[in-house]
Image 1 (tube, helix red, strand yellow):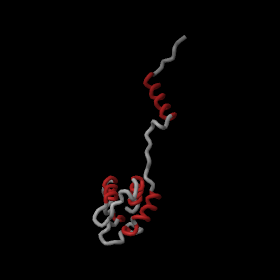
Image 2 (cartoon, one colour):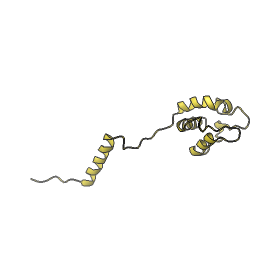
Image 3 (cartoon, helix red, strand yellow):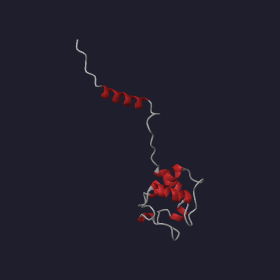
Length: 111
């Protein structure tokens, strides 16, 4: 009787995939920011100065519809929101990380 040929590398890959499927605690989890939560947070904390449409309701605030202030990485926007700048207050301790990321995602809908 002839024995079947087994590809060890292919079998190992299949087993690794099965382990990841069977135990999701091993697989990395990624969460996307929530634009709808971002809109709610924006309306609560940001709209008074930045306007309901992102055009700015106070002189000197950026016009998000033109991309002002948005043409930078999320981390830069995160730091700006967390630390504040000029007349904009710091939101560290007011908004948590997820809320800030949600707001950034919502801000990008204006542009």
